[in-house]
Amino acid sequence: MASSRKAFRITGTIVEPGESATVELQLPPLYTHTELAMPVHVLHGRKPGPRLFISSALHGDELNGIEIVRRLVRLKALKRLRGTLLAVPMVNVYGVIAGERNLPDGRDANRVFPGSERGSLASRLAELFMSEIVRGSDYGIDLHTGARHRKNLPQVRACLDDPATLELARVFGAPVILHSALRDGSLREAVRELDIPMLVYEAGEALRFDEVGIRVGVRGITAVMRHIGMLPATKKKTKKTLTPAIARSSSWIRAPASGIVRSRVKLGDRVDAGDELAVIADPFGENEVSVRPNFSGIVIGRSLLPLIHEGEAIIHLARFEQEETAEETVEAFREAYE
Ligand SMILES: [Zn+2]
Image (cartoon, rainbow, N blue to C red; front, top):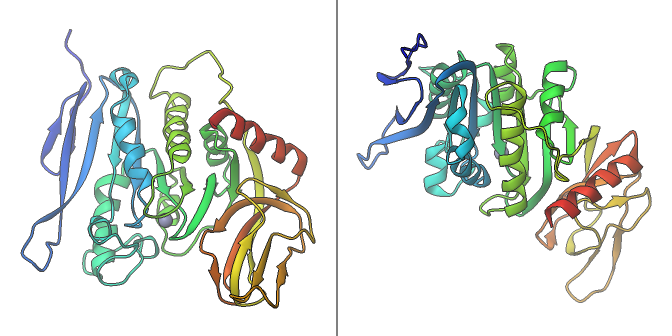
């Protein structure tokens, strides 16, 4: 039976309905005369549907998303894909090569969007990503981790003032959704300008794989794909289907003194105002100082490095309107995944 569905075209490559391809977007070469490209998996479903992009390693040392994309594109369910999936495991290829967050010009790729063809190296990369991947897409999911030595509880960050985005954030099913305002020059801001709903998923830490964070990520993306009609719906709810807790704000608790840190809390713990979250002391254990928050919340991120200077961030606490419900959600999440 002849299909009337059109082939998908990207930089001169034609992908027919029901087929997939790995396409390379050419980047400025390395100064060693080595060619460089951003690889993109294109899966063009047999039947029409939305176009979703998945981006990962926009920060070159944040690796969980690379593994999430690898597992995602191998799923058997994608044989029944509707619409088009563009999965980009490494946006900042330069950073991945160097094991660095930023580009070789020192710029943070997530602060230069929408970019420009005549701009900095980072800005050119952003412009290429916008023109080839983002424009024409209906939805996006951008995959991140915590920074180096900082680990995040799996969480979705999105602008919850937009109902369509909030809906997707709920469907994704990470234990926590954190409302976050748009940041100048971020991919999320540039995508929002085009009225394309986009989620940021954060889990684990830089330069490490986090198995739970990876599994939650793969499940979250497939749940979103079912919800927007790219994959057939499943009837059964598993114990891993969560209703996420929504936090409207969060703050980092900062070190009141410099020294060696002993943490008293784990990711996902609920803490009250005045609780001792950590103790900082000098190397001989003298002059101990307690770290206590002045509000209650749930630990959604923490520094793993036991060395700290005064003013540095130690623990990321999210505020919830219904704290008990949030605590139950995080508990249920731990049970389901551990
Ligand atoms: Zn990041």
